Image (tube, rainbow, N blue to C red; front, side):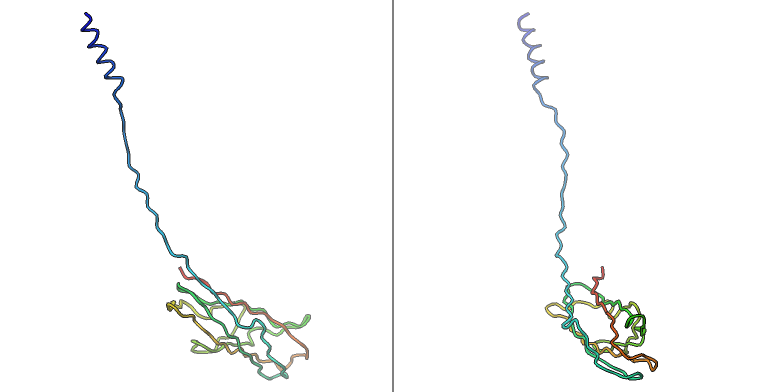
Amino acid sequence: MGGITFIVIGLILSLTSGSIASAERVEATIDVVQDSKMTLVIDDTSLELGQGAPGDVVSGVITGSVESDVSWRLTYQATDFKKGNLYIPISNATIAGTGLEHPIVLGRSGVIYDEVEPVPGSDFDFTHIFSFLIPSDTEPGKYRASIEYTAIQIP
């Protein structure tokens, strides 16, 4: 009987000391991307159009650059020229210059350049001639407006 007991104990030990395991493998991936780089620089953020009489066209130059390693567009937002309660619509202004087939008549907002492809190792430099027609019924005084340029990455 001792041998049988030993065998049973051996079987019991064998069953309880055996490991049951189940394994699953998880595959992990990382997609490493390069951070996009985009910089807009306007060389002089003050545009002085000078003096003009009603009916004259005054103008000034806006220069800047966009550095980007992705496709981009350049947009603007603008306000009317104001002096107190008086105003002259921004639609009296146009911009012409680098890469523009025709002058753009400004509105409250719009696109100047669309879907510009990056050129490795170089900036996109631009010069805009900003022209403004002073309406014939404009009262004398100093009128102010703002134009905000924005470079936007195109996904």
